[in-house]
Amino acid sequence: TPVPSTAGESGGELAEAVVAALNAEPLIVHVEQTGTVETSQAPGVVISADGSYDFSGDDLRVVLSIGGAGQSIETEIIVVGDTTWVRSDGGAWESGSTAEFGDTLGAMTAAIRLVSDADDLRHVGTEVIDGRELQHLTAAGTIPYAPASGGSGQYDVFDIYVEDDGTPVLVRTAYSAEDANGIEATGETDFVFSEYGGPIVIEPPVD
Image (cartoon, rainbow, N blue to C red):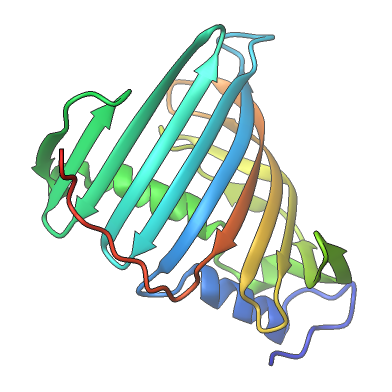
């Protein structure tokens, strides 16, 4: 079991264990994401952005739900080996080479990994979350945030709750960013991690 750093100090064995878990290869984990975002393109319009992710090495299953201004769309993605299937709102599946979706899939994986440097985390202490005693770490400095559509940003709030061995359980964030088209965005996103190490089996769609 990693030894937590002294509260207030950055880095340390626990932070290193957290970063190692988030950046594991292969990555095998289930993640539930809930969030909201508001952009400079549509001020005052709050968009919900929720996702369910199953990672199993290079294979992936994703359900993304985007809603706002009375509209919503659900996109499903399944990656098994060299083939990727995509459909929207329960329609017909379309398939293609996984290589064609490489940048998009890479961005999804990067968004889940969240932090890559243990020195970016500072141990706060032990807290009870939903009846579980967890270790709480927060940002020690500026943690970059990368919009899926390109551009750059940062996490303005970053709190991660982990088991004693560094396994992530819950992450609460708020971020600000500007995408590749100059559109500014602010939002909040929570991530709930489970099934670390699996087994998670991902199969091609059957319909």
